[in-house]
Length: 353
Image (cartoon, rainbow, N blue to C red; front, side, top):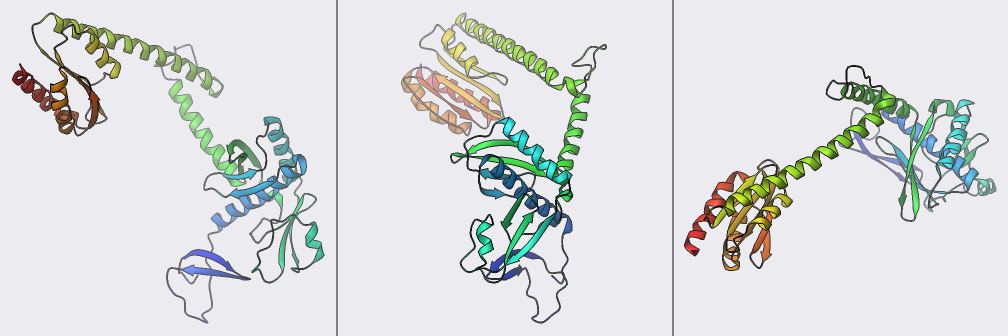
């Protein structure tokens, strides 16, 4: 308003009270600068919600309990525990047919005590409301009390896409796209599809005689998942073999302290080493992970010594840990200080001996 931003609008009886970041001089003519792109988007979503609500209630008897105008997609909460895909598809077909035939949307004004309001779908009129009651009618489909901004014809919606449902508070939430949001989403999906086609068509994934179009994406991703799963299994087996070798190498020495750190290791790697060491009096300090991602550590040995230095190891690595009966393990943040922690273990092991 007069180049002063409006940050909120609230209803006070029959008045719409605008809240601005700066005061406006009383009596000054107001020039309104409207964000039409945002307003038209909201009109499309709101009229779309009225249409979806009416078709689903008329067809299945599921009432709309509330709705949410989201930034990317909107949703309505329905008074049912589930909707089948067939129900969703049939409702979507009826909704878009009403759009296709250019159904008019008309605003009517009623007196607050007009008996005609009894036939109008409504969630009730606020007690402090003053002035005429506004009813938005979608010809032949619905008439509902509403003070919001709407399209004048369903053709301005272009189309509506019902997306998916999720359970909420014993009912369901149905997500949808209306108007320009359908085209915007399709535009983004096509761009993503192009990038996936390019990525999945690279020589790394395909042979020279094989091509990959959008219809092949699911098959290609499933193959990649299968390959990745096999690779992860092989990597785990290799780590277990390496862990066994580390333990066997230590078993062939007279050392009493074993310190091993491996960036690509995991808890299983440390447990294998610990279980394969045959010297029951050995002090074993193992760690895995990197400084950028953090990691884990495991300290085993004589209970008194482990209880004494375990917390100090965790402190050096800026981590947290705990344990009992000669075993202390935890998470670590500063693995670039692993050498300091190893030196601490070795020094105390010498003192213990």
